Image 1 (tube, rainbow, N blue to C red):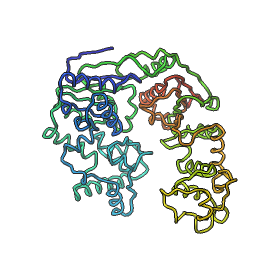
Image 2: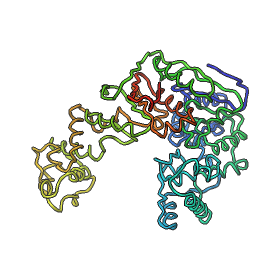
Image 3: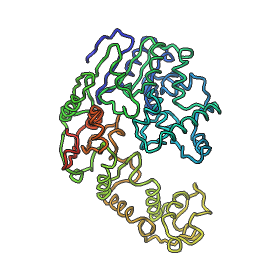
Length: 514
């Protein structure tokens, strides 16, 4: 384990892929507790709410503590909210953005949950409202809104963006409301007055902090006896979303490199190292792979792969490269997830399972029966007036015979699911048939996950399929920021625990060479 200059207030922990940064941080929490540090004097700050919750759960289990004993295990946003004096009812909610949009003449200012709870990575194209994301991104980066607008090259006019930004600020002022970026700004401005004194502070995934979040971190530094910043600059793939990896790299003080990966196999490691060496601005570091050799295979399409065993991540630089794989998996009857959604919806699987359960003589809930009915035609499978099962409660149980006798069911027991549910689209019927032939369980957790590389960060799988194709936007961006592209594919390669499949296009001029 490489350690440089341990006797400093700020200490960085560099965690290459699979080396266990969170475990290393919790080990240091353990050391602090054993040394007699009060749990309430330990700060642990994660990048997202999910990560913060996982850390506090692990700490409570490991150290036999109650959550109330760890008040400062949270995200930076929730920390700022708790200390700033901002009441919950003063926090901007979706209805506030909707109201403002209506007042401005019907402008669409709808936002998703991530945009209002502070866990948003501001993807202007995919996540939430792009206009609100643009405004918040400028503030997180601490740049002028016009600069952010010019860099983003949005289709809407500058005057329109400025008009909405000014109206949003006026609305918040008028009703004494705050968004999650406001919370950080208030903390940076007034934090010296209400920040608690901490014996030791941990900040995880520090390479993803924005300039404004770094300002929060430095207020914490002033009120902490020791601060650990953990991350990996080689995995800093969110610069487009405001992350300031340069700040992480440039921190003064000592650092430690975790040297043993518990994920990356021996055959994949040299490929990862080759990519890392292409990054111009980085902290030199080495780490050891797992002893398991694993395997690297170069292929031309995913039809060559047997997905029947193990866990899988199918990754691409841009989401549309995954369309062909999704169609291939459906044709072969594999269950998978994409963007967090199952390839067969819970509603559809409930209907198929519900009908087949009734054919076996079992009872199903009214809710499940109502779902079954939704895939049946009126007049042929269900009598008119019974389609929505008005006389059956959701929690009530019914049998096939009862539905036939009392609730208008015309379909008969000799009909299998696709005969009874005659409104099923042909594509769904074909996919479900393929799933059943393969013996896939509809309610199982998918072993196969399709994702962009950005969406996979922090994940891992026995098998990784990585498309090397590049979108035109990526090719263009790489001309002035090549490090960003190198880091993206470094992350993609290092999700692998066993086997790596590199899907290489015929036109290698539009691909990333690994």
